[in-house]
Image (tube, rainbow, N blue to C red; front, side, top):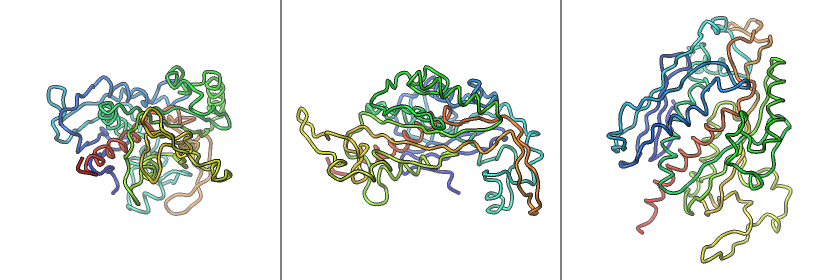
Length: 358
């Protein structure tokens, strides 16, 4: 059913938005990794609902419990199981949707594919599932820390409001404001826009930019398992994502090859590139430069307005927006993008260790 991701560092998530709990199984995490439960919880706190006036007001502590795979604070090499209880479901908010298909949701496609669907908050298709990914991604981050690899994401655009290139920003300021934009002036503009959209009972989209630093060369596999291909797949698996571009992305189509090529040079005995239009990846394999990419998120599909639709019998109906939803998903999507990035890289680090004899 597509509930698992990864080759060597592999995760399987489970649970529904309005079920008793959600969780994740991590298989393939090497033994001997020190597990910092406080760090895992901090990552979950960055994603959890109810953080500010520009996020959904659903209240969940998102407390992760480790059920297996850790002994005396260290991984044993056995599968890790983490579970997160659902604490603040209001299933009655969705009772009017039992036989109705919401615009731009997965209601119709799930019903068509499986013949049955959990209408309570979207069930398995809900973004609530991403909390399990963040928990797993936190473990992957702890693993990447052993290799000195750092993953940082931030909000770079909301609507038409944009920040500059990541090289002009202090990424250490990302958590200084509720929208998670490291440019404080632009952040205030973003917050004002999201709050205005919220009061208009509507939603707005945005972009999350991710930067991976201190990546060793050689991560990625040829042909079908290219590093950027897996990053793209991982990002596009996140709810509400509509686009992915890395390096120069779509802007690069208007350049000439003489402008776009990243020339090599020797810097203190290490081969580097003078520019990084490739986004740290060439031939699907990391080249030790910063990996950077952008992830586009659509406006949240649930709006607090009446919309025309049809029911399961194809009869016209009016869908009324109810429940608690984000006016803009990108502030809470930052840790999700980081988590999926960490999971991709952790998997490729393990795969790279088997690529040659020495």
